[in-house]
Amino acid sequence: MINIPFSPPFIDQTVVDEVLHTLQSGWITTGPKVAALEQEIVRLTSSNAAVCVNSWTSGTILMLKWFGVKAGDEVIVPAYTYCATALSVLHCGAVPVMVDINSDFSISPEAVRKAITPKTKAIIAVDIAGWPCDYDQLNAIINEPEIAGLFVAESFKQSLLSRILLISDAAHSLGARINGFAAAKKSDITIYSFHAVKNVTTAEGGCICLNLPEKFDTAAEYKYLRMYTLNGQTKDALSKSQGAGWRYDILFQGLKINMPDICASIGLAQLKKYESDLLPMRKSIALKYCDGFKDMDWFVPPPLMDDKRETSYHLFPLRIKNITEDQRDLIIEDITHTGVTVNVHFIPMPMLTYFKSLGYHITDYPVAYEQYACEISLPIYPQLTDDKISFIIASVITAVEKQVGVRKLNKVSGKYEPVGVSF
Image (cartoon, rainbow, N blue to C red; front, side, top):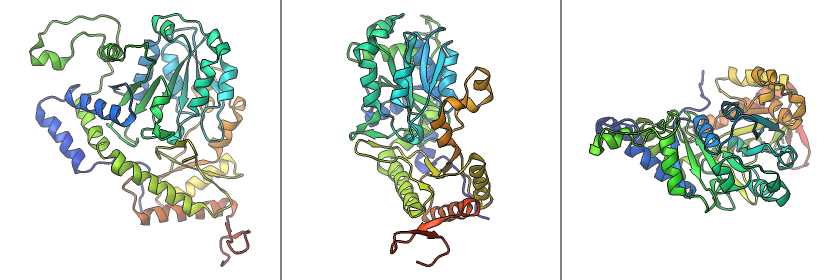
């Protein structure tokens, strides 16, 4: 039987060579490969600086702490995202204020506006599947005099910014663009994930991109954050090993969340061919899926590109019109039986036991539930051949037909007819 995994990492000889170079160099923890990866990310995103860490989650906890987020504060997050978005807030003692999304999976700016209070310190907007949120509208909201007037600064960084901090949860959206430029430039802080299933992976890892207003000293902030990832220590292991002396100091209560070179080397090799090869391959697969499903009356195309935004093609979030959650689950079972592994992104947080115990209710987020109930994430990665893509498309159509029936567009009559009809 055919076996098509959901999202294997892209490991070619260049990745192997980069890892071997690191192993043979005698230095495997944070060092030159991490620095090189940060430089590549700055180049790709045009960000002012990039700080690599060991995960998206730790990077977000770091930046919330950097901004002074604490117990009693509120951070607005979408209900439709992976749990780490809200857990990062909880780890700082603050309250995740969940809001609903739009039908394109992105956080609803109007819901954000209504949720802002004097306790709001930050907004974490999530680029689901790689589709950028409407950052122009979010920036307009947090800079409105009335909204800015609600902001209560309680730390030095908050006083310097003088408004709500806008963080992009860009775990999915490396390479996404807005108006032809990297989407990362639209937020104060953009945080990427390099987890094993992401477009670029370091096995585990993440990266913080800084695009703060000019009143912030980017070089000083980078140096401070780099120390923060190493327990607040003044001197890292590499500098000590190169004759800088053994004596160090601890300046503040930091975290131990640095990325090692052995991980950075995997991502570095991938990133060098990301724009030229890997990202175009993902886009090509997404367009083939759209072409394969376009004549089906149940097909809801995912947001890929509009007049301003383009996705990073991290996921292909297939949606099926007018089905229930139970029907979706049966369709997934049937697809899986053909040897194709699919997924769902995501179970909205208010449906998870822990968040229900905190008092969140999915009935308060109807759009999030509607999108979740009909969504199936299809495999999308460079190693997929045309034959496998065609097999996936056929498997999906057969599974949907079994559960709900399928009608295909007759291009002559302009009407939808059962799939078995000869056009």
